[in-house]
Length: 472
Image (cartoon, rainbow, N blue to C red):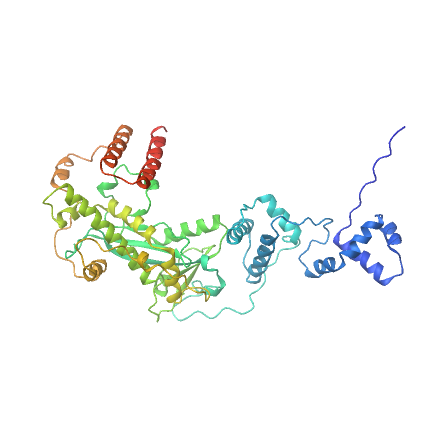
């Protein structure tokens, strides 16, 4: 005898469930009669009646997929709701919301909520189905207010379509072009020792862009054999900042993250960039020409310069201890642009996020009125170098404002021994054997000088990475 096949489960869509509720409300049909009409069981009709308020709320919201038959609740319902709220705000502002943008925002919301969640493409597809996102014809909502006319001197192409308040603090960036006398010593300023440094960070201090250093020399000798991709900062062989290249790379990076960000710039810089090809993900927001507010807070720039000068003095002191009798100016002559690039990257990394947040708020560059994080005053500036008073170090930090001394422009003089060794050409590049010997020498020096266990831990990580690279 054959066993009878199981009765196929017939699930109703949201639209059909609303029809069931209308029939029960408007006619005298019983639940059993309605069940026979829709070819479902009576308990299913009973469950629909129990969930009447929730079903009607989903129907009236306009966001639910009305053809969906089952609504499985997401494990991360809080992230679901927060992302849907952000999506509606973004569409109301006429943003072109993409899949990568939604994935990035979902991960950002998960981090804020403290949930260990990595959104996937499959999760995004289910989220769109649950919330009826992406179904039907696509349209862009017009902004509630027409854009303001551009101020005199600015064309409509440079007029930002959005204002500062339209962005979250994480998506508002400020940047500054900082002149830096990279090997000047206290009391002595060389006219040819200047480079330009481009700094950029967001108003929450959670994201710092890669430092860009530009100099007068097309190919400094110190860069021979160096891989630019391995450096912690970028070098441009011209004293001016390559705005078009830098902005294009910034725009590509934000596009890969699916973000729309604002970049604060002086009105004069925005005017100069008027002919730049359109940026899709970076919106240039010019500051008022009459305003003296910098696009990156001056306290942030000064903290960077203080950390740089502190690191420079430490390096010069080490050279003097190695070569007794060497003056500070002689030690400074051996500092190369490559040294400056490394020190600039290290100094930028030491500027604390708390200082960046409070500085943006104090300068009025934060997109919303939030309470500034109370910065640790001791962490804003490095400790005073040995032998310098507070006033002397402060004057050294602001050295760029002093009159440079006249003298010959000679790049990277170095010591007499180094000059003699390099007369016949460039120094040979270090080999893998040189790197491994240097590791052994460094470890031995640590062992003989009472190094802390924490520093040994950092050395082990460096040693492991060098050994890995030697095996490639």
